[in-house]
Structures are given as C-alpha cells and as structure tokens.
Length: 493
Ligand code: GLN
Image (tube, rainbow, N blue to C red):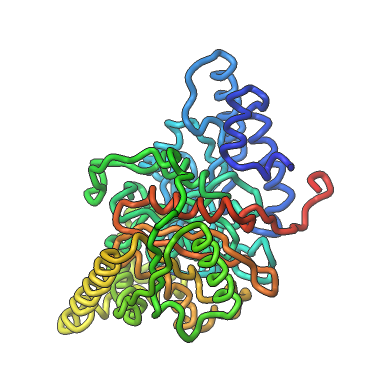
C-alpha cells in the first residue's frame, strides 16, 4: 500500500513509533496533490509552504521527546467556508475573493492545538448552496471515480480530496446534506453531528438553524478520531451544547447484536435508483446476519421535508448574506453612484446565480404579508418532522436509509434545473430539520462503478452509537477500502 492510501490511525501510529517523519508524510501529500489535483480540482488553496514548515516543527518536537497533539502531523483539508487566519476563506464566492479572516474558526483552532497540518482549503458550491460543487465561483471539482461525474456538494472538494488521497481527512459543513451526499458520491465516510455538538464559531453562516460542521474520512475509525477533536462546548457559539464528549473510539467494535434498525417506508419509494435499492437491501442482510432486527417504520411528514428546507434555509440565508455589502468584507464595485447603487453593483457582481436565486426566494418568504404563509408555516411542519423522528426512536435504536437517491449524476446534467438539483437532498435534509446526527458510509457500487452510500440516523447526541453501528458494517465489508483509478503523473503510479 502506498503511503497516501493509509488511514489516519495507521499514519499516526507510524509517526509516534518514529517509523515515519511528519515531513515525509506532508511532502508525500503535496506531491500527490501536484500530480492528481489538475484532474480533480478539489482545492481552492493549497497551503504548501506553511504545511511543510509546520511539519518540520512537529518533527522537532517529536525528536526532542516533547508532548505532541492527538493529530500530530496529520494533513487535514478544510472546506473554504470555515475561517482560517492567514489563509484565504472565499466560500467559493467572488464576493470573498482574497478575503482573509482575522481569526481561526473554533474547529481550526482545535486542529492546530492537536498539531494537525492544514493542507489546504477545499472547493464548494458558493456559500455551500448546492449539491454538485458546480456552483463554485472558481472551478468545478470532479468525482475521482469518474471525472465526468460531479463529486456531490456542497462539500465536494473535501469529499473528492479524501477519495483521491489528496488529504487524510477533511472538514465540511452540512446544512441539508452537504457532508453526507458528497461522501456517498465519492465513496468516503461523512458524519453530520447533532446540531449543537460542534461549534460553528468561524463557519460562514448559511442557514443558522441547520448548519453544522462535519467530518469526511476514509473509514469510520478516522471519523471517530476527527470528531473527537472538533466536538465540544464553545461559549462563542450560543447553540453549542455543554454535554460531555464521549471517547468515540472506545468500544467502537461493540457490535449490533439485538439492535433495532428502523426502515422508513417513505424512503424506499418511487424515485429511488435500483442500484441504490439493491445496495441497501444487501446492507440490511448483513446487519441481520450480525444479530440486528429490521423493523418497518413510517416518517409520514418526510414528503414535505424538501419544501420546508428550501423555505427555512433560503430565508435564513437571505438574512445572513445581507452582510456582504461592499463595506465590511471582500469585493466592492469599482464605480457607483451613491451607496445604494454601490450595494447593488457589489452584490450583482459578487454573487453567482444560485446565491441570487436563494436571496430572492428567502426575502420573499420573509416579506411582510408572506411570513405567516411561508416561514412560519414551514417552521410548524419542521416540528412535525422532528416529532416523526421522536416517535420512531421510541420503537427503534437507529434508522437506515439511502444517503442519495442516485449513485451520481454527470457534470451539467442538473445544473440547469434547480428543482432536480434540490431533490438530491431528499434523504439528507430531514436530519438537519430535526437536528439529529447522521453518518453516510460506503455500501456498494452502481453498475457504472460509482460508489453508493447508506445513511444511519440516531437520536440527538448519539454519535457514538452511530459510529459503532457503522463500524460493525465496515468491519464485514470492503467497500470503504476500494480506490478509484486515477490519472496520475508517472512519479506516483
Ligand atoms: N444541497 C443543499 C442546498 O443546496 C444542502 C447544502 C448544504 O448542506 N450546505 O442547500
């Protein structure tokens, strides 16, 4: 196995045993990025010089037998809507071109405290609005399994970076599925923690009642490792909860014997791709073999989830994005006739079409006379969706369903049809509306050889249980270990 194909835990062990220097690891990933990135386009910024410098520093600490952090020398890619001091944070938007945050996000500060190496900032749909990474104001990221296909979105850069071994792990953000759906489409593990589990301080706000930072990794144990580092209370995010963070790796192999798995009938209905359906059937057989019980359940308000989400998320986005006015951040139109004209020109030039569409829809839903009919009504239906889950979890320990209704789609295929694009999130959105944690793990391949992901959902703050259930499956299968065949320069073949 080549070094860049290892998992975080494997590399961590070798670094600590002094079989591998951090500089070797980081140089290996920088080389890998140089040979593969031109075909994948996962990064907006590669942090080459600073990463190499940091590696040398950590090597020194190890040589001097000084204490090093939990992620010492591990390259981590960070989605470009998470603030990093001294490295630009663009949100893949022209409006934030060259913007450098004066502070690190809480999660970035945690990574640095644990001696991780920030290897770069990854591409996304502008302001995390999209499901394909085609809405980036800079570039289109390609799916490592087939460059004609999208990597999913909006954390498509992070998912592709992990799948193509351009980083060991990555952070993403998930407002309606943006960690889990690209994880599924790229064949990696994606965790969206409970709303309140991870601080959003320094995550550029999209839909504040839904946003959560999540992890993208090569396997379930690595997900446990990264979540361990970023989870926990932070007084600078008022939604961050003061709840003890368990040891996620401890007893991760406790199995699923007599676990009750709920299968929502609404998620296995029309529109589900047959390959995805087959893969899910296969996973349920494995869980049954491992001693779990499969129980049919119903989540009757699921059919309203996408409509509710696109009212709530857009309304909140229209308010959050009001701050990009050319005065405080980023781009400002070069010529204008007065302040109102300056706002208009700046925002017209700086935002892409999807962002503009959302601002208009969101403002409409919040405008006087329509607020009750849209935002208020959507909030009420959102509560019914949450109650569906509360009732289901009285009968079952977790819920399993597909992550994405299709294994993937081609670049350009859905770009002209926003509604079709919005339906990509039909299975991921309910967890955000209810605030519950969810994980997507690889569970098969389509006839065309594209990865398929399954989603596991549990009650609030039960990430540990999710990781145990996911690991039980991963241990029995090798879908997560399969690698895409990439075009690479001869040096790395
Ligand atoms: N695809 C969804 C949207 O476009 C979700 C995005 C996200 O989770 N950031 O809003």
